[in-house]
Length: 292
Image 1 (tube, helix red, strand yellow):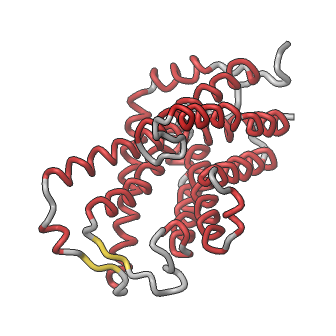
Image 2 (tube, helix red, strand yellow; image 1 turned 135 degrees about the horizontal axis):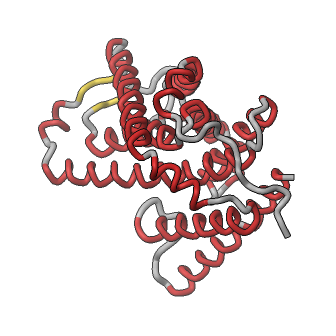
């Protein structure tokens, strides 16, 4: 039944977003909820968050306040987990680029480095802060709200179902303007990458018992992409089957990276949980069926 309620929620979720988009177009503001930055993007995220909070409190009857208070009481553990997993994510990304560099697929751009200014550095820093905000928002929506809500016990069947369904939704909503585009070959490869990323983030959250660890992995991987795009200090050659597009999320190399990292985190589940677990275990506290 939880899946039915979630599907109904996902069906009705576009309605307030469509209304907001209509208001923007009629008013001639030039804004759109599909903007990748600025007020349009913020308003879209705010609307989704309000809808999610409404569902959690009115339908699922989950204790949102207690959830945030739990992390507030354990802020030192949460912070330690965040910085540890962020360092691991960045270390893996750097190692991957070093390996690709040794194979001749990555080159350092000295020209871009020489043209680095405080203005570029400042804009890059701001972009990384935006990445962090987006990572927190998406982890709250797709892992804490969706995956955790669908995991009402710790059985394998329930856990796998929650992970796969939330990862599918996570990948799907990355192209709301043209969802049928996922059936095109190039877009389908990106969908696979996003789906595997969703699984990686679910595994991180479940294993560590802290959604801040998932935020760290998410922001670390996405932040590396933003950093390289902003600074252009690295040129990547994309002439092979395993590295065949500028969007690295759509390449078999990155798929292997996501899958390998998920497996490594799972294998290290005991020491990670001992150091960073805040939720023991990560399961929904929502009262279901919903109370009248």
